Length: 113
Length: 113
Image (cartoon, rainbow over all chains, first blue to last red; front, side):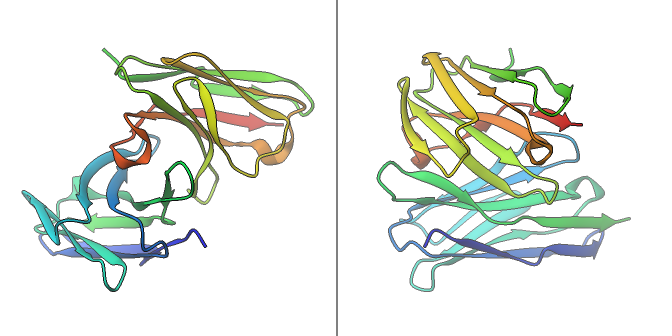
């Protein structure tokens, strides 16, 4: 089926710690994996994405890793700051006819000063 | 310039009414979407249009009818509103479907009383 599982649902860290959010997907044909950040009352915004031809991608304090064999990918945030507090969604494209993005259930990250 | 815009931002209405939400994108994208985000923050695709053609129609009641007058616009009309329709509705757009970044509008917060 079309499924993206995301864990944990909530994550509390101290400022400066690292945060890791994990996702697994069901469709072995998926080849595009974006991560979105949604602040309270705002729209989801892309923070990083990865395609199936690479295993890791980094952008400053944010990195994403992909394990195609195990069908899982993870978001890593280092040196967390209070402004990183938000809900984070992973997603994977599902190759059902015309592709669509299936989103994970979200992780509420709280970074305490 | 706003890339993806929606109107109205807030919509409060009575059960049984009919309402419309409008979406416009100025990114030149060929694919547009409607998503529903419920109170638990789950993001689920409802419809997708590619070059004005309906390509994805998830299990959505037929009270919901999307219309795409041109590639830059995708509107959502809802008949006979029900309490369970209360949610945030996001429009989004991308180029070439779900293989590329989707840009979200600011959302329309619908409350059905």
